[in-house]
Image (cartoon, rainbow, N blue to C red):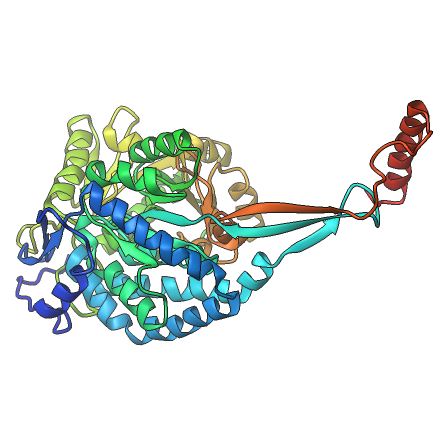
Length: 524
């Protein structure tokens, strides 16, 4: 692992004046603040206002008033805002990456990739929204004399609770289809990573989004979450399964919908005909990309006995050669964990595994010489289900290697989890890999890739199975979930019942005969 002494200067775009302007839009009537720090150094960047329940209620009131006008705005005009925003987001991607790095500590390669997500989401819905939101008229129960029109209406004000691992991608990308559909948004980012989504809101307003339509409130989850959910007409949440269950329960009590993308314990199956060089490179990203802080990243790798040693040796060597350090350039291949607290959690998982018999092939230690929250890329063997990291999402640069003797065994091991968010299958014969992928219980399965091919396919829904979530983002579902369907039906002539003087049994006979006829003619 490359080691470089810590000597950093914050990116010149992230000035005190700049971040003060960003946080000024966060309501904080009580004067309470939270120290938002630069992860690489631990230095305070800005005092982030903390929103009270009254602040949140007021944010929803303002958003609701703006939403009424926005919903009445023709779709063509709404889409024009996002056409301009698409260009603005790309043109300002480097500044966004600066903010992401300062607040999250991820390496710049990952930060710049994160900036691309909102424009990709905008691009898809700019093409698709007009068709999805257009009224759709269909035949009613009586051919020619009845019609039924599906009309899509915005929910109202959508509450979005975004995580710290991809604050810009989730905070902004999840809001885009909600706004296009005619909703307002109240976003609660994580305190640690509020700057990049705040800048995203500013860019949207520069593109013409009405002021007040996109509100941001800040605070710890237990302090602000209940009020946000109680005020919202729909909730979008990305985070842990435990928190997701609490949010889902409260949303259910309020009779509002929610979409929950939750945790994972994602497996990777390597088949015996896989290209080993490509597979090892893929596994490096799968385990250590974004320092292992990706909901869809790989924590379990299943290898055929015949190729286990070959993979293990190459994988360990490549992990040990990674450039891991704090820098605001594109050099490092892995950056920091998001906080010292999270680093300690990752360390506790490794320590627990070692205490119970796991072997550390490489890594396993904090690296305070690189920065307060750095942790080495870590590869484990002999991990079992009695270990915390054997069953629970670690969410760090830690991965376990396992052998299998048959493909059936590999599939059974991959499915032996309460989660089902993402999986990866690697093999030379793509048809054989597809057959294996079809047997894995997961909302996303990538063949010869880790996660990007599935997640970046914005036309296809992406969500989790089992304890990994409810609902999905992306695809048609990713926009329609933010709408309600109204069924407007028209009866052109009063034919729904017996004719004057007709006996009811004759009416029933003709009705049943008509149903048979319509089936034969494929009308119904």
